[in-house]
Image (cartoon, rainbow, N blue to C red; front, side):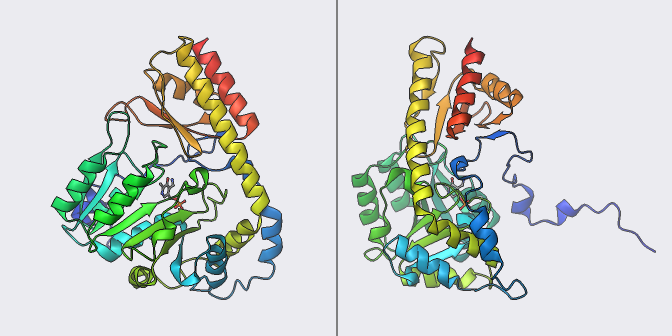
Length: 366
Ligand code: PMP
C-alpha cells in the first residue's frame, strides 16, 4: 500500500492563504478571563432557562434556516422590521459573508488601523486589497484622510468600527454623518457596533436613507452570550438580500437560536450588568489614572473607553501581563511593535475580578 506520510499540505493552500497568520485566541481558560471583552457578570445566567428550552427543540431536524423567531425578537428590540435583520454565527460570520459577497481578487477594502482583525483576515483570504488608514497618535480616527482615501481608492467595502476595538474610542456623530453623506453610493459601508450597548449611539436609524449602509451587532459582548455565537446585521432589505446570496442553508444551529431567544428575554439582568460594567470601567479608569498621577508609573496612558474594556499603554506592559498571568488573570497584549507596542487591553470583569486585578497591579508597582 502506498502511504502519504510526508505530504506538504500547506503548499497545497491557495497562495494568499499560505501567507496568512490565523487569528490567535487563548487556548487555556484562566481563573479570571479578561482578554476577550466577554461579560462575566452574566456567567451562568442563561443556563437554567436554556436547559428548559432545549427540551422542546427537535434536534433531529435541521434548524430554521431563516432564524425567524430570533430575527423577530431582534427586530422588536431594535424597533425595526424583521426583513431588515440578518443573523449570523457571531458577527464574525456576517463579516466573512460581506467580504465573500463583495470582494474578489484585487477589490479594495478600507478600514481604520488598529481595529478588529477579522476584516483584514477575510479580505486577504479573498485576495482583496486591504487599505488601512492609521488612527493618529492618540488613537483617534482621522476623518479627512479616511474620506480622501475612499474617494481616491474607490473601495467596494469600508469597515468603520464604532466604538472601536481595541482602542475603545468613538467617532463623533457629525463626522460619521459626514462620512455617510460623502461616501459614494457604490461603496458598501459597514459600521461595526459590537460595543453599541455600552455607548448608546447608533446608525441603525439611518438604514432606510442609506441602502449601502450595514450595521453589525452581536450578543457576544453586552448580552454575555459569546459561547453561543449570535451576531446580527441591520440594513435595508436590498442589502440583506444581496448579502444573503452567500448565506449557506441552516447556518445557525437550533441551539444558537434558542440561546439567543433566552438571552433577549433576560432584559433586566442584561441591563443591570451593563450598569455595573460602566460603573466598574469608570472605577478602573480612575485607578489606572491615579497610578500615573501618583508617580507609580508615569509612562502609563489610559485611553478613554466607551466599551467594556480599557486600553492601556505603558513601558511595563510586558511585566504587568506576566504578573497577571502568574495570578491566573488573562488580559490581551499587543507585543513590542507598531502603534500598539507596549499596550494591553483589559476587559471589565465582575466586582470580585476587578478588585483582584487591582490588587495584583498594585502589588506589581509595590
Ligand atoms: N466586531 C468587533 C469590533 C469585535 O470586537 C468582535 C469580537 N471581538 C466582533 C466583531 C466579533 O464578535 P462575534 O462574537 O459576534 O463574532
